[in-house]
Image (cartoon, rainbow, N blue to C red; front, side, top):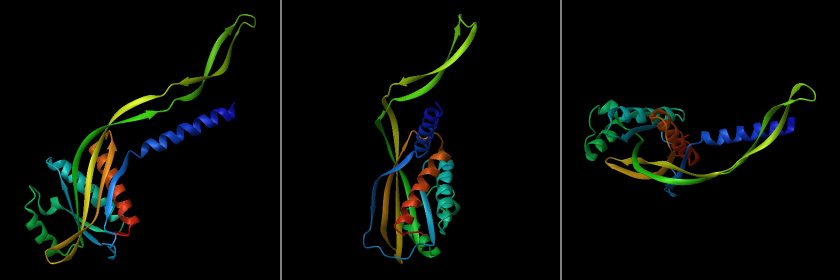
Length: 207
C-alpha cells in the first residue's frame, strides 16, 4: 500500500512540475555565421499599446538579461510615451553605444487541442460492519478517464539585432514562443523573457 501511495505522489509531483513550464519555443532562427562576443548592453523595446503592460514586459526582459551580465535599458526610460520612428530609435541606439537591440511583439493567439491522459488514484472507503459493530476502512483504485482539452496559446515574437556600426544592424536571433492560457501579465512576461534569455545563452549571444 505504501508503495502504491508513493508512486501516486510521485506521479502527481511530476505532473505538477510539467505544468509549471507553461511556455515553449515553437519557432526559432539564428544567424549560423554569427560569431561575435556575448553582448554586454542592450536596448529593450516591447510593442504594447497599454503603457503599463509595455513597462511590465520591458522590465521582465531587463531583469532576465541582467542575470546574464547584460546591462539593459527599457525603452520607456527614454520614450515614456509613444515610441518614435525606426530611424530615431536606430540613431539613439548608436549614440548611446548599445551592443544590441531586443524587440518583442505579440503574434496573436490560436486554439490548441491536447489530450489529457487518464490516471488512477487510491481512495479510502469507510463502511460499517454489523458483525463487528465498528467501522472499517479499506482502499480501492479509482480510474479517472482522460479527454481532449482546448486551450488558447498566445504567441510572442522576440528579435535580437546586433549593432555592427553606425546606423547598421544585423538580425542575429529570432524566436516565437507560445504560452498556454497565461493567467497574469507579470507571470506571462517573466516566462517568455526567461525562455528567450535561456536560448540566447545557449547560443552564446549572451553569457
